[in-house]
Amino acid sequence: MKIIKYILLILIIITTTSCYNYLEVNEIAIVEGIAIDYIDNKYQVILEIIDIKEENENSYLIESESINLEDAINNIKKLSSKRISMSHLEVLIISKNILNNHFNNLSTYFINNKDITTNFYLVYSDNPKEIINNKNDNFKINSKTIVDILDIEKNNKYRFDYIFTVLNNNKTFKIPYVSLDKNNIKIEKEDYIYEK
Image 1 (tube, rainbow, N blue to C red):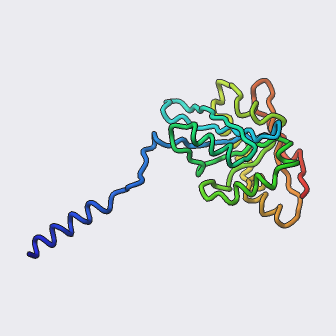
Image 2: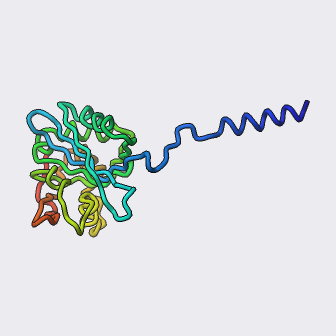
Image 3: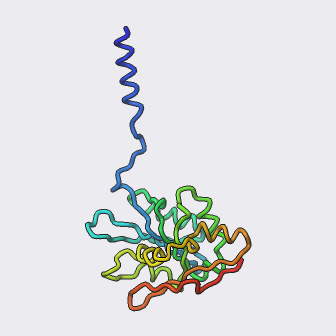
């Protein structure tokens, strides 16, 4: 009788301790960067996703739009055959329009979303889509290029979580401006000062 109990106990342990929601790496789309603009009363969202199948570093883009930021991002999740993971997000590129008129909505979405890290760099551009869609043979992942440039200073003042804390204390904060110079990403630090 004891042997049967032990066998049953072992079977129960083996069958109930598996990883029921485990995903293979190739089933996950890892988001490196996001570009967000607001045009014609719609949020335009583009995700730059690391292509892990490639031997050399590479990325691909998925784009969507909606009158609501959350809906635009959820539409991308529906378009992707993989599970979208924003837990490793490195940079968010926003337009001047977002910065001037929709920053509160944007910050609320990112702060309240438990699936997204808030330790990413925040930059702005005249055309975020152009920045994230830039083609350069030397720098294949545009989001990573921005991060590499900003990481040189080893300063957290351009990171979203720091900016959000400063913003909540009713202070001004500075944000880098990103542009293109002959398909090379160029960053002008502290060019724009946002005031709440």
